[in-house]
Image (cartoon, rainbow, N blue to C red; front, top):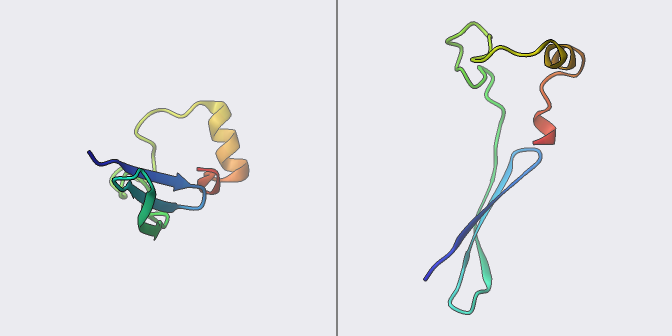
Length: 71
C-alpha cells in the first residue's frame, strides 16, 4: 500500500510526500507556483468572472486586490 500527500501553502508553495513501508514521510516534490497574469479564464471573458460577484466582494477586490497570498 502507498500513500501520496500533497501540501499547498500560502504564496503558491507545493510539496508532495509519499510514505515508505514503515510509514515515514519521504518528500518527493517541492515547487513554487506563480500567478497566471491572464487569470483563471485565460483572457477569454475580458477580465469578467464566470459567476456574478457580490457587491461586497467587488468592494473588497477594488480595495485590496485578489488575495493570492492568503491561499
